[in-house]
Image (tube, rainbow, N blue to C red; front, top):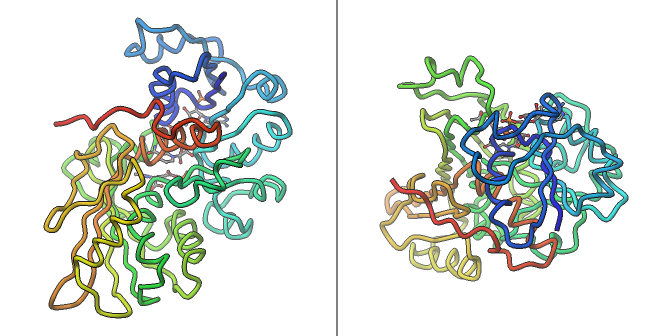
Length: 345
Ligand SMILES: NC(=O)C1=CN([C@@H]2O[C@H](COP(=O)(O)OP(=O)(O)OC[C@H]3O[C@@H](n4cnc5c(N)ncnc54)[C@H](OP(=O)(O)O)[C@@H]3O)[C@@H](O)[C@H]2O)C=CC1
Ligand SMILES: CC(=O)N[C@@H](CCC(=O)OP(=O)(O)O)C(=O)O
């Protein structure tokens, strides 16, 4: 199979290249760059020296869709909405890592992203690529909207309780934290080292663009749910997301019964690991891997449920989830090429 990566010089693109070079079904990889075509990849990222040498290519949608079997778009929002329509209509499958194709309602996308939405024909074809919950649709898809990093951690943490209609509709609060690589390779005033190190900052309060993505999936599972409170914080670490989720159940339930529900949903899933009683994951438990680890408890005093869900934002939150989706689309075992265990410490 021949794969292409657009935005290969970005953080998501680099991780895709690392994964695809170790994928047994991928025989050729072409890298595209909007700013550095003609440059050798290893000259920009010397850590890739010693392996295959890649030259960055100009984007030529007509040629790309004829030559390639799968095209990953690891580009900022606003790119895929314009580029994907030009890539459709061939045998090539497209997997978009940006937020452009996740929100079904164009006006909602435009409200939260402040950008023009993709055309209806493109949005209508895009399948939300959360493999643990959407496998059947993904297997038939030509176009995948790879979930956002925060939504991946949040939705995997909420799926088993929301899908069964167990949650009080107005009770969900999501307190999320991310490492700095979540913001991509270009520093801004918040992610600049001198500001971010030894600092802890809340940002985009009640305005984060992942809110509509999270609510869209939650209301597919339970249409009675009301808007959620979702807060994001920047942590001075390179990778990792922790979503700490608080909610109330409609009816009393023992912690063990709740844990059993999570286990029965996720036992068949190779990349979601549910902790035993008293166990809560930290971000280093999944660093560099495609795992999502989940811990949970019920407070005996308040009856509130606390669910903790961690992922590596560049892996399960972006590149490795995209490869998991590619595996499902091409009918490979979904674990293919995703062997890496977490890097620790
Ligand atoms: N970082 C993360 O943890 C996650 C990121 N995402 C999403 O994935 C996407 C990629 O993120 P990330 O890799 O972090 O971002 P980066 O900013 O690190 O990289 C994006 C790359 O896109 C390319 N690019 C920029 N403008 C254009 C353009 N107009 N046309 C084509 N290519 C362009 C650039 O490469 P070049 O100049 O070589 O073309 C750049 O290296 C984003 O949409 C992001 O929101 C999703 C989940 C997690
Ligand atoms: C730490 C940090 O800044 N993270 C980014 C994640 C952006 C992202 O992944 O954006 P899309 O999924 O919408 O493409 C943020 O919170 O905006």
